[in-house]
Image 1 (cartoon, rainbow over the protein chains, first blue to last red):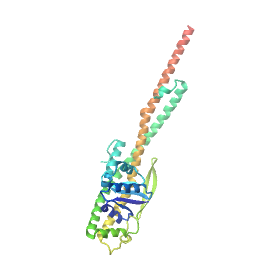
Image 2: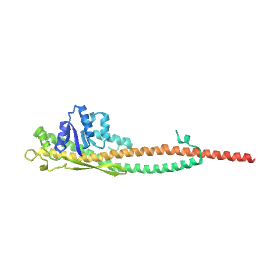
Image 3: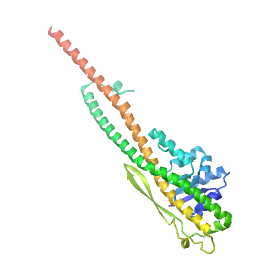
Length: 101
Length: 206
């Protein structure tokens, strides 16, 4: 299994330098392209962890974002504040108290 | 439709209901214990998840800064060609472990941190800035793997806590009260029949 990264050039270049091979460069304004690539990587059985940027994650469709947030194979990590917000909301719904802060 | 509307008021039904009430109360107690233990496990993982998230964001900002510096000094083409020269890719191995009946992932990684000579792009052809950028991203990737494991564990625990909580509430507020109501109704009906019987016998005797 390996790590995959999706995002703009400036986001993915650094991960290439760390040795990540499954890198998909998508321009920031191409939301449809971003969604297509994310769906493709979500179905790829070789991908164990999918890394995205929170600014891009915020702009994709709610249905896809929900599927990605709930996915455990691959695990999706959005770098930034948004994943924290989703997880914080889930904790508040289940436990009843905001335990994240 | 409530149980009391469908059940026949007989002694055997009353015995069956009493057995069901006992079983439901036992199940309720066990599920409550399971829910409480899951919440305790969840708290243990939560603190770790919070720290990792904070660390991840800080590491990303550092790595971003270093790679931006490398690109501005060395040029984008040089940084990208160094990236393409890399020999090995990080590999992940997904295993699972059981936490209170919840299957959570255990991710092992290999080949992330590399020494300068192992990267493949040579010491002479590149500068220290590219090496620093690569090191910063390698550390970030390591932390991303830990974050992935911990956050998946949290989500799975939350799902199980939610499921268990619903079952506890269903038993506590719906199933057990309905069973008790039906049992009370049958007891009352049987007592009434008993009283009618006594009255009838007294009339016949009289």
